[in-house]
Image (cartoon, rainbow, N blue to C red; front, top):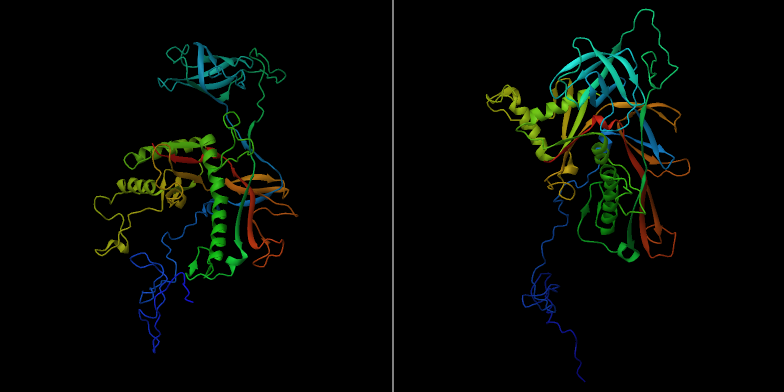
Length: 479
């Protein structure tokens, strides 16, 4: 009885020699006709064993390690306080009359701490007028002060709104006295005691998790492509590469979450199962400085405006610039345009500007005014899988970060320590460290914790970012 074989195969003719012929080679690919049952391919394909790393180093982390630090905490919230300014100043004041000034702005209640007999400077940004005045009466309830100018009869000619007033001293008569017994409506004899005020800010950590799962059967399968990852893992087992990349991706998320994090706005958001956390961009946008549309054409004027604003803030001497590619080139072009050797072609030469010199058309640092700046490219803003290539209005193009530190009291250590303005706090105690936890579960790959025929690689972290003195940071955005 004849048998019908399904599927049918072509004839395999053995050869007397160990050689590849179309009659003895098993073909595992379909031929031109799409017939998958043929064995007509004569030669083995040439196989590259190593994986091509076409994107180079794909990790994005490292930014926070350069500019900050990581420290443990034990609570669900981190709270810090920042000083207010030392001197007394008011912006946006109005003129009820030519001899009175209302310190309140747009009807907003503001604390009046200007005492009678104080001497003040009144500035009008609109007209450029200014007057030094003696305060003869100060009402802490209404926020109105009565003044007597030293060199003019009154404030005629001053704009009625948008004035700036600041205290520069005081003047008392012989034999006079001051009293701090009253802080109500003053009659010109009571002194207003100024209590120090501070701003309090807080942030809460978020929990980040990730997991990679590989079955026990797949762990026994050896791949034919040699793989390598950014952390040095290499070999022929695909699950090792996937596990390694899962960890690298999670470590990147630990940083990008601290950069991009946003707190939930309960007035507009419907999120009820998350609270969010304040990241770097959110903190600088809310409490720092934002520069829009920096370009090489008018870059120096824009940058000088930034310097003038830094003068009004902490005036921290050393700062770091982390920029995307186009903004970095704009800074290079800005610096090149003001270089003395730009026209002569000698400003960028290496090797003592010889005729065979190599040109260096970039700058890694510069000094302007009393500030030093160190410039570097930020891969996070250039990578196509994140913010790279986005462009457009309101796109993040760089950030200026002060290189200073601040002194704070650490409740965990019980002492004053110096911390970078930008640092990460993570949950940790003697019982559990949640900076970066990693553990195995399942019944494969050395794990024997359950009946699951697989290996589960788990990652967890709980952390938040503390952005202190955000008024010294600058966020560059596209126009």
